[in-house]
Amino acid sequence: MNKPYFNALQTCIFPVLFIVALSTHSLAYEYESAIPQVSGAPFAKTTATPHWIPGNMRFRHEMADLLGEKVGPDDSGDVYNAGGLAGYYTGPKELFPGKGKFGHLYRFLPLIRWYDPAYYFNQANFHPGSTVAGEFTNEQCVACHTAENPGIVAQWRQSKHGTPSEGKEVVGCDRCHGRNHEKLIMPTYTLCGECHEKQMKGHTDGGRGSHAHAYHLELIDQGCQMEKPAEETAACLACHAIAENRCDGCHTRHRFSVAEARKPTSCGVCHSGPEQYEHEMYMQSYHGMIYQGEGQTWDWSKPLNSKNYVVPTCAYCHMQDGEHNVAKSSTVYTYMGTSLVDRGAYRYKATRDAWITTCKGCHSPRFARDHLTAMDEAVKLSFTKYREAMLIVTALYNDNLIDPMPTDLAPDSRGHNVFSLMPGKGEMRKYNVSNIERLTYEMLVDIVGAIYKAKAHNAYYSPIYGYWEWAQDRWLLQIKDEASKLKRFAEIEEKLGIKHTAYPFWKHGEYTDMLLGWKRKEWGK
Image (cartoon, rainbow, N blue to C red; front, top):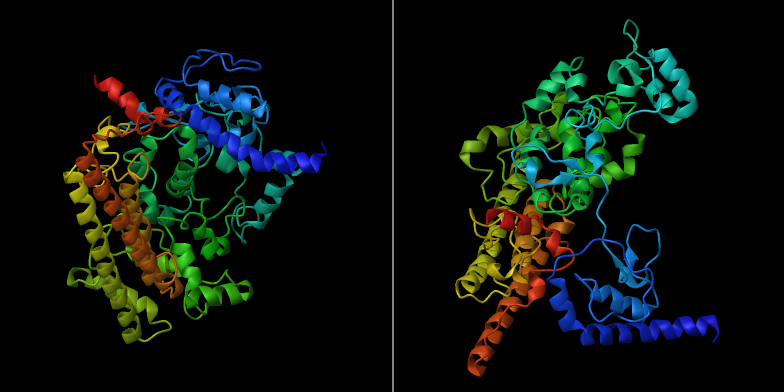
């Protein structure tokens, strides 16, 4: 058989065989997936599915038979086709313990030491070590790293540390990293603050919602990473941790460029994507359009004011005059826009007036005030759709019609089975919940929050045609459609005398069994 013909045949036939295999063994899979995963040496090769296989390995062997592959661990380096159906999960070989009051519940990948250096990297038991021994001066560091890492040496020479203004001393490698190569430190904002006191004070003075609390408060003490495996939360933690613990999240090493930090692209590293669409909203505004068209010609070394910049940027509005407490340009903490508040209320008059003053560099106060008022009204209206959705979902919950109900799911990170959307009781989870709960969560966290950000940044496209008001309409329709199906199914089942029981795959699975809730459930017994 020629190869092109075989490939085409494989493309056509494989999906059919795959569906048949799933259908034939669905009951066995449901049963086996409820049994804890086993560890140990895999079968080197399978030609026929064994009569009994411990744990939830049966599915892997069935797929191996179908694909003509061996069953094996996902860290072997072998390629497992069709989505890795013949492979099985192996966890990371090294994990660091968590920290804080819930630190005993979760673990981190070693990556965390670079982003929380004071607790991890700079401590002997978490330090990555070094193959070079001895103590060195800055001149010796530069000489060696010019050969080993020429890029960072070039960047350092371009900085004010490497090439200071007249009368200033060079800030070398040893000043930031120490001289003992086996015990090199990773600098935190505290070390930077020894020279940059004003900036450090501004950073640490920030209240909730500021960079100062992005890591320890928002994630370590109450974050969703508690329930998730360490591999999933690495990016969340890195972003939040570098924002709080280090200065080079904005002033990247080793140039520590003020000009670089003033550009929206610096902020966009963290402030973009679902739940924080600030960068996208700015770019869709007239401000963002002009920045994208002309920003490459601006002198970013100049102070941020209307004389030097045609339009404002993120830092222009939120870090005026070099202010490092970004919360000073906020009104009230609303959990990324997911809590309802009228920012135009009289109690926030001083903050509103401060925003008007910022806009006055280019606009009339009346223009600015009208746009901010439009933001207030659009935000308030967006919550009416969420409340309408919640009325529907809560009624389903009270009538025991959500499929699956909380008691039919794997427990949450506290070891409980509670309605995820109930204030004060649920955890506002977007995973391990029913479809209608997930849709309702997205309507609030992704869309309501983003409508606020679109209006705040004066983005015209997104509030209408993008992922916002019209999308919120669509989410409300999906919620109503899902509610209709659940109610109709329940009516049919009642007439036919059927007692529906949630399927076991809602509680167990190769991934679902890794969630912290099961361990908490066991510990609570």
